[in-house]
Length: 136
Image (cartoon, rainbow, N blue to C red; front, side, top):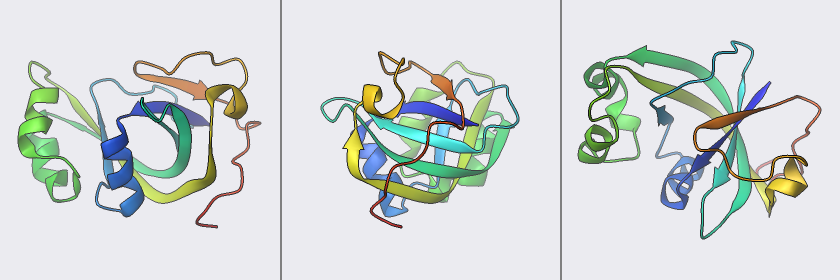
């Protein structure tokens, strides 16, 4: 199963370059069968641009998550702390192989029925197939 997440374009670029090996979240999907992260780049891009295999999900305090993943965060410690300010639990989604799409897709093209980008995430079933990718 896949989970579609909205990510700012600057962080998408860092994921695609390999600089950002973790996606951080305050809330996480509950279904253990989620093994792929579908990456939607927020405006001004506004498209589904890639998929990434999930290598694992870490759950701990923000301080511990930063200690364990900060070298591959792709964001500054200050931004990380600001994002998790007031949160007792942080999640770090490990990103494995990333498949950039040869042509970014609108939400309607990628997953008909999803009309807007999710605030947190939305589940996508396996019958939605990855299009040709630039890295295949």
